[in-house]
Length: 154
Length: 260
Image (cartoon, rainbow over all chains, first blue to last red):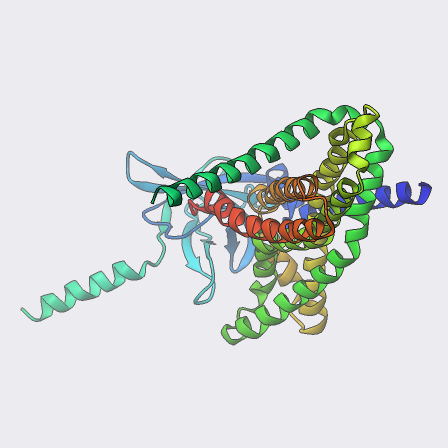
């Protein structure tokens, strides 16, 4: 009976350890708390086409934050993307910083690339990036191409 | 025509009767939690269905994780996307393969044993002599086995997922040479705590209830002969496996159907 009880205890413990492993190492629970040492920026896009929460935000290809929410603004028909950016950049990003939605490789996911501007003022907590460039949407591009070719043949 | 109709009616009533008896067994065993005050009964069953299943779970988990990493790698490396192996393996395991394979193994390893044990107790009149002594076999025999299944299978599922992902990491990172940072980082970026781990584990809970219920009921309801036990054991494995696969489809539809 004693060995049975000990082994059941060990079994329970192993299950709990597995849960901890899955939560921390696999789902990255400790990375969710970016808000602790990060600040929020917003950006409006015409089209985010497949950008999801937790997508990466980068400057020159280096990760500096992540997307925390993607929402739609029904008044203007635009997408509002909220990002959590590393606190180190808190008063370093100029107000004319641009945000662009990019694709990682051909099949990769969407992410946001920030390009720094030259203004003296800097972005603060909750500010909005105005200079944005939407995602590359294949359908729109083909649509453009078709209209232009139609125009030529006139 | 009338005879045919009558047979259909008999068949339907028999099926409904089975469900009714199964519901009664589940209800009376669950209400019979009072017997769980005798903690040693539950511990014994946790050992039987849980601890003794660990070896098969760990071995299968490791080989499934390793195979997934190997196959994922050979396919994705052609697109230069071998860094997604970690994420793909983790999502597939947490959402689908983990709960389903654990369920099938659990039904084969633990469910069949429970059915055979209860069936043999019934055949050798142990259950009826208990009743004669004023002990409710549903409380003393069925309830601990039911609860042990509810508790043990989710734990086995967590073990399965952890070992399988670890095995995938071992093959992918240490053997095939995927960059370790990309492997684990991509996994942590893509896997969400509730959406993937939480819902997957919830699936495990639901499978645990279904399998344990089928196992104890088939044993309790078996025909008390040698042949009856063998039929009951087979039924447990077949019904549990089919139920797990069918319920998994419905759960996936409900949980992930609205591709957000």
